[in-house]
Length: 375
Image 1 (cartoon, rainbow, N blue to C red):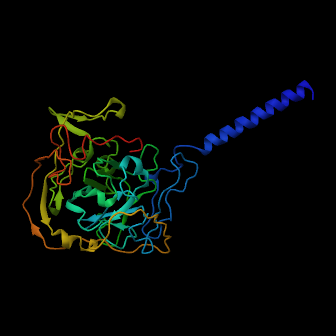
Image 2: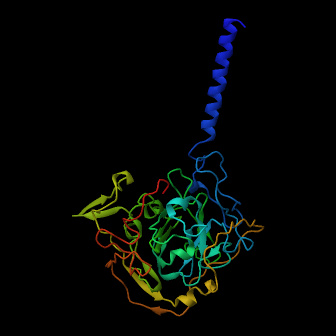
Image 3: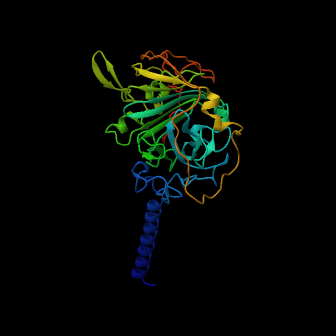
């Protein structure tokens, strides 16, 4: 072979190698062509088997599925379609397998709900220790106390945040979508909620779903303050041992506060700087009114005799679209007086914490959250 031929052959080899490497880089990318928050599906007929179908992304493929019904409704379900409607009808994101950490499983969380008919797992009877459902002009939220070991979270895990964004725009969990009838005025009329967040850990949780027609949904359901937890992202007056539904005012946007008459925006420091040991402000808890209290055994009667977490694979294949309608809350009720925005707090991190509110420098689901890259 001549020198020219050998040189040409060498160049061709290099060109092929570069092309192969280039294709490999393209195939293994971070961001999907369409972010999860931009994927909209009509309920129930428009929901696909899986929402996240992109290939070659660094976090792999969607863990569960979104087309959920009676064939997937069991304690091994991998359903990742989520609902929040009322005090007795909502879900939380939690792991598939027992003794899991949020930091290790946030991308693979599955839906655990209070009502059958969704094709999901059910929260075990007795796991919920107290909840406050709040309806405001721009969002609904549920603040709760829970034995997190019964929904597969490890004891002592202070957890973190799930939301429809994530650093790679695929959401946590990947492909997880949310629906609600709280804004449509009809128990069977479900709208997809585009902006939401759910903090889990410390034997407590907060869940907020923002009105998809609201002009400030992305602000009320902000997703960048994953290290400061429920007390700052969803200020509340929830009480352990109390089950209630209230009307309330809007909160300030998470991270926004007023100091000496000046409106300020908090910037969360990166985890590389260490633990957050101090905060420049205390969150303002919105006023609530027209609270109705319930007996938990009546409110969550559908959870009776439901087992806890499972190590099952949950591979049931759905054969039809899910059924079931939202509920407005039922049970023995007792109207209570209006509340003001006094946020009395407890620094307890156990299952018997009295509030999920700011108190000093340490809060339940507050600054003890570990930061997560994809939060």
